[in-house]
Amino acid sequence: MSGPDGRAGEREATTPSRPAARANSSDAPAPGRTRVTGPRTRASRRLRHPVTREIDEQTGLGEAYMRSLVQAQLRLAVRLCAVLAAVVGGLPVLFALVPELREQRVAGLPLAWVLLGGLVYPWFVACGWWYVRQAERNERDFADLVDNRWADRNRG
Image (cartoon, rainbow, N blue to C red; front, side, top):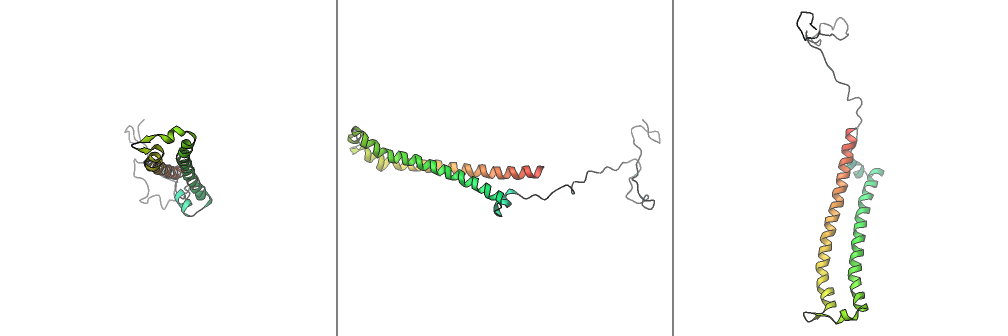
């Protein structure tokens, strides 16, 4: 199609409906151009608060998030304590039930002394290292959850 002046591919300029006094103002689009406006986005946007604000202000939602983190840390601590208690408490029971182990010697020392007096401490250190890594993982997962929730709420 050709425009009013015979050139192909150009569209006729449209003038928005305005009072006659403003029709000649500088706001009118230039000849050969069309004014394009976007949708009103400011009117539809709601004020959204980050989840961290919910936690800081101790709202119901923030308390639920914190409760989930504390429960995850508590479950981890209880599991670790149960394992440590079973191992450290189980060794004396094992030595009481199996008399042959009581008489075993390692480097001239009774096996019970070597296990309970020496090897149990590296076991504590290893369990402590594992606990710290798991606790940090729980905190990292919690932070990711809070950040993702904030990002999801901002998108839509």
